[in-house]
Image (spheres, rainbow, N blue to C red):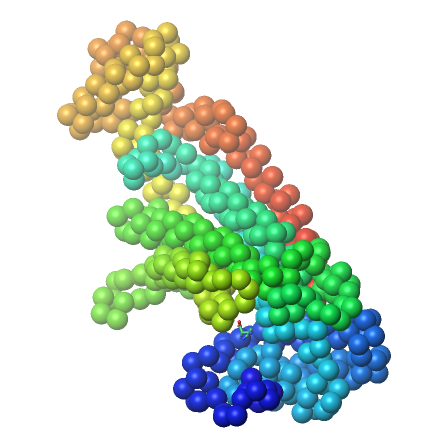
Length: 472
Ligand code: ARG
């Protein structure tokens, strides 16, 4: 800043430069800064603040700078603090006085607010696309396992029989909600701060509706103070990211447990497992553990920004520069975690036989015996009690519900008949659950069809809206 300023007599101390310069992390925003500047220049031309020729010179030069950055021909300097002033300085070095006109009617405050919004908007779309990929992997697994029976758990105790499809589709719903949360965040944030200037707006007759539309926003923000002070959208997106990580972490936890030799329900492919440096027999689920572990930092990032924002007076304060590293880190972490989990799912082996075997101990069809007695006229509570005694009897004798003789059943209630064995067959138990959203095949197939549709329509939407036309 000192470089551009006439106010300061001394150079900025290196300790200060090191402390407050953000170029080592906000250089990530170069594309959005350039796109924003091009549209601002077009706005200046429209307001007759600069001539058409001047705007063209600025625009051509900014596009050149973009190429040079992409070809790694440019070294940024901490003396120019951040990406905004670095690019402005490069522009001025290239085209002199015309370049000095670009910052008319603009402040770094609305510039950074714009850049972050454009960046965040793209990242929302890209994480949404990662979510579609993981939903797609789940969809495939569900399609292939509509008849794969397994125990469902509550309290990590075997509870009732379900199908693997039903189990894995629960995660599709979590990720669909995450997808909607991001869609909502996008809608709320798609408002342009450009033209808010430092905080009060600007005396130049800039058409904020024009620049907003050019950048693909729905509207310019209503209040210029809010325009430069608002970081809600980052918090909202990081909140959605934290919830995605929570979902991924729950899935990771189950992948870890279910692929352990004690469970043996799943097997991770070699390409998504790691070995041990000492124990030759080991095949470890490191990727799943890391996803679970990284959840902590994404939660931390959310809390960091919430805390940073909570005591800041209006409008811009430098505290707000702290929005970047935590947001960038969350974007990277959630993206990598979604990708690696999708990879694990795409190559996951479902051990059908072990899953079925697991259905045969743990009395997971006990509820169905109670339902059987209820159908024969008993109240559910009485039936529930009788079945409890049957289970205690089986544990005592070390037998299963399937291996109990009909005489033994009849000792508990005369309502039992030979049809009890059919009623507690795992497949029957699954198919009997008829309510909407339950584990029976019709319901699963319905869900699978719905998801295929969802994936088709949403994939098209994600690919819309690009800023690339501006830099052509
Ligand atoms: N690097 C700053 C940030 O990230 C840009 C805005 C600086 N504005 C200012 N008035 N110092 O927040």
